[in-house]
Length: 114
Length: 114
Image 1 (cartoon, each protein chain N blue to C red):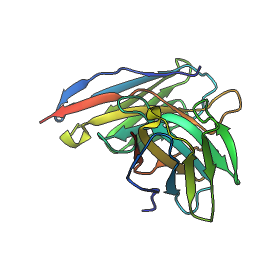
Image 2: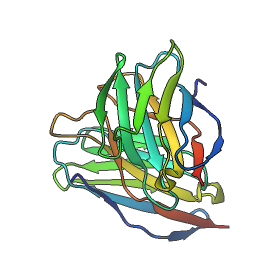
Image 3: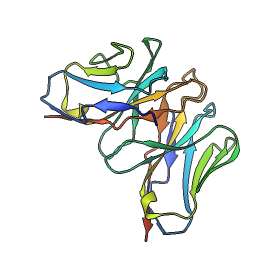
Image 4: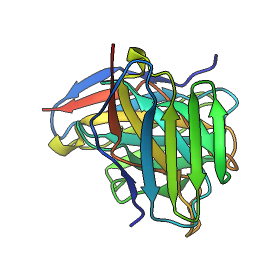
């Protein structure tokens, strides 16, 4: 069964450093998303991406964040200068059509900012 | 601010019993409703989606939607210890033109006791 994959599973970085989180969405899906979940809190939407551009972004997704689809399979989230409060699980999701909006989640990347 | 509220639990049921999980949402324009299961430290796993008023059954799971009351529920019949997890209610963007993001509730922790 097709699934969303994410790398790395765990990333440790120093405050102020740049990190890139990688995702490979399900192959025939066209809509891609990033969510985050701070430990013990709810899953929060960051950004959605379709047709090589951002469809929507949340207030969390400020200028420190960017997304890119560098090739036909990868979808990346970059955090330019990490802060302590960026420590969270970051989930990539994809869906195949807007009408149903059924989103399938990857296993996540645990980001720890020291 | 669009809200999704869930009874936080924890909910504890004996093996073989019916577990009932509830969710209310604030945006009357929401069209798509989802239940995800999340094991500790893992990503959300889709269990059910529902779009129309009424019941939708899939194996031991039944989702119920009442748009007039802005209420979604999930029933788990013949609960098993492996059902022990946090259950997340998620609702699509609804009115305001946002069809992309999912808004999640905080989740209900379910424990099924052998």
